[in-house]
Length: 168
Image 1 (tube, one colour):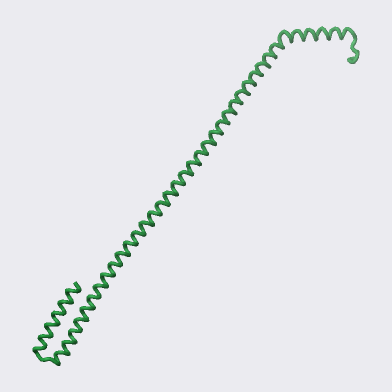
Image 2 (cartoon, rainbow, N blue to C red; image 1 turned 120 degrees about the vertical axis):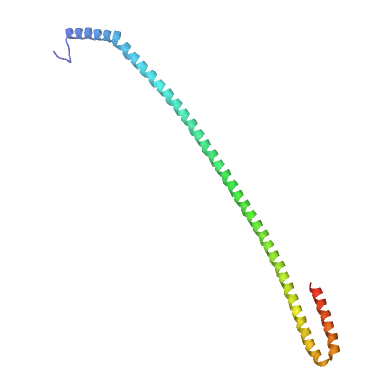
């Protein structure tokens, strides 16, 4: 017996056994296998549907995330601009206030200098007048007699009074 050239009896029994195995598989095996394949196919389709939904949600989340980042950047830019404007405003106000304060101090200093200058001038005039009177008195005393000295003293006193009135 050779497997390459089987004789008729062997061939007959092989066909009968194949038919019987095919009948048993067709009756009991194939329905179970096809139902399992159909369940697996349904499960795969459901998984693909869920994956597609998850992908769509991820795309929406990425868009929303990008939108939130853009809004945050815009808000950051707005806050930085407001802070810069506030800084510039404070600097400008400080400059104006400093200029006003400087002008006030300069004005007060000029007023004080003018008052001190006027006071010094009055003192100098008073001292010059007193020295002039002193010198004149000494010169005149030598040359004048007592009656004339009284007259000169009277004149000097009058001049002194006039100078005091002018200076005040």
